[in-house]
Image 1 (cartoon, one colour):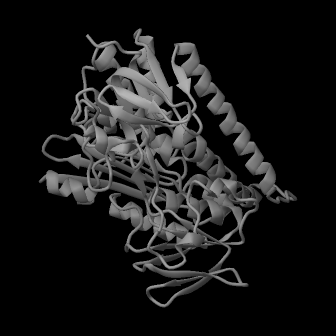
Image 2 (tube, one colour):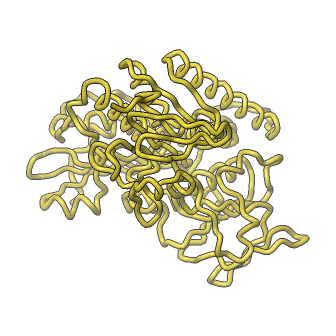
Image 3 (tube, rainbow, N blue to C red):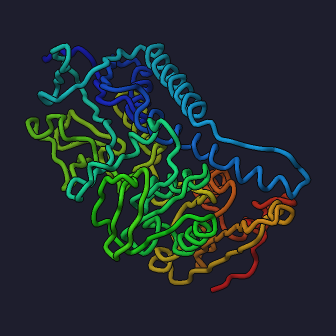
Length: 454
């Protein structure tokens, strides 16, 4: 019988890996975790958390402008970028400390170095040249920004990894991409005062989202002063005395101070030793797993963005928790529902969605009913702003079940989190209609839409 140093060895200290390690240790397993950078992963260190703090910072100029309509006068404002950057780094460091404390207090041993697979039950710690034998191995190394390697002048770009290290707020920014990260950073820079261009090869932003919300966000971005260059690709980047000169495929020319490449992320699997052990991967390097997160090697598992299924932090956390329960505790009674998982884009305005888009719902439900509203929120009346709120409820007419919820506007992320609870519990349109409204609120619109438009 083989002797093991630990019951579970986790490679990667991000959201999924940390949750799996802590839960497994809570079940009594001997657990070790290796992280070569900072514990907390992309979300805490260079993703969701610092980005959301930048989003919040970018909204204050709009808040101050709106306040004048409510009688406030004489409030000057000027951004102190170093103070903002220092504040964000302080918060990130605080959170990393909490993650480390949580792991240590759970009994998880942390290795601050890179680990690679050397066998079905062994990993090699690179810096210390130490081999650890594990009954089970979990790969939770997340993803890394895709870089424009084939682009002429592509080395002049920065990614979402480097954007938080900018020493000053750039006056002119071009963001390349059309997904979550690109859209959010375009909103951030524009809100903070940078002249901002968002260049995307697709005709629509946010592929996979409801078309009406895609269009609504694009309209809102144009009104806010963001230049959208859609349906074009970037041709070249050249560094000049003016700044970086960017040319696109349609003959457009942009002179900017920063080019942020945000064209997606790839699974972070390149240097893990997967091939030598026999762990199968897909075309983009994603680790292939079954419903129980098991790879082609029975003792090796993978969760989170490294599997490139639904790349959201709460999904990685839920997967890590479920795996730890399955291996060392009591398996969960229900599987993770990827189809109805809620998500939000922290653009300004925000976009929140759960369930099917209208386009997907029409393919799946023959008798689809669409309820929607588009209105001006109360604060916009005195602020005299162009702010709008869009909401859409999709209902299967045959069963009355709500199959999709979509919100574009202020606090959409907060609203969709609660609405998703009802959706996942199988709420019907009749039940929404019977729910008493809270007035005056934006959210009351979700329970007061009576007539379908289709």
